[in-house]
Length: 240
Ligand SMILES: [Zn+2]
Image (cartoon, rainbow, N blue to C red; front, side, top):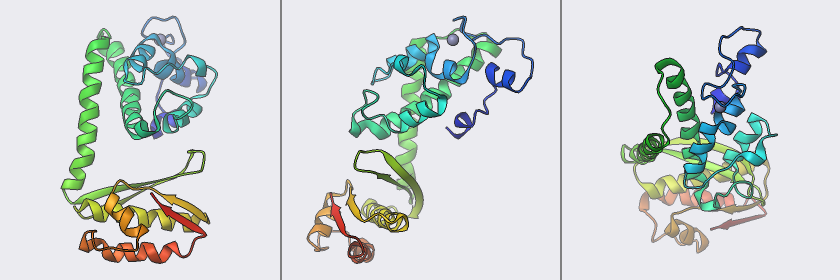
């Protein structure tokens, strides 16, 4: 995502921007369009077919005028703009990153290996790559290292900050508690005063709401006490 956002992929329009002459400046897929980043990744007939074949049937037509950076922000914040349910946000983001990467690979294999694009085999491959990415994320937890993602959103659901921290423990409940604590630390750094903290770990949430930590894993007690202490530093903190 970083590489794309920084326009460092050498598509023809970027090369022309830098006054580098290239032989082929039209899209390799034969649409008669100039090969810009936006074209290759969103508006090309190949890109359109792939995005529409995802479970969310994405169409980018109404975003033709939007810049590449604006489209990438939409991928991170799809709710209300794209037909992606709030609960699917993370899965959509993961698949979207894989789609962008795959579109770039398709472009290259068409140019360099003369391969013909096939929607069916592309979607099969995307399905496998998506499962692998999800598996890699869950495997990290089994291996004893958790990557904890803290996503801060405002009251409209817009993403304000994303923080990723690694954590040495294979106890999911402990990782969830640590994630909540990191969220509170982030909020205090940012000067936010009214918080809603969300977690999938229901017994942690109910333990925090009742200040009763008996049902939570014993190893999480220290972190949970830190969370309860930090709660007092804000105007309001709701655990959900
Ligand atoms: Zn094209």
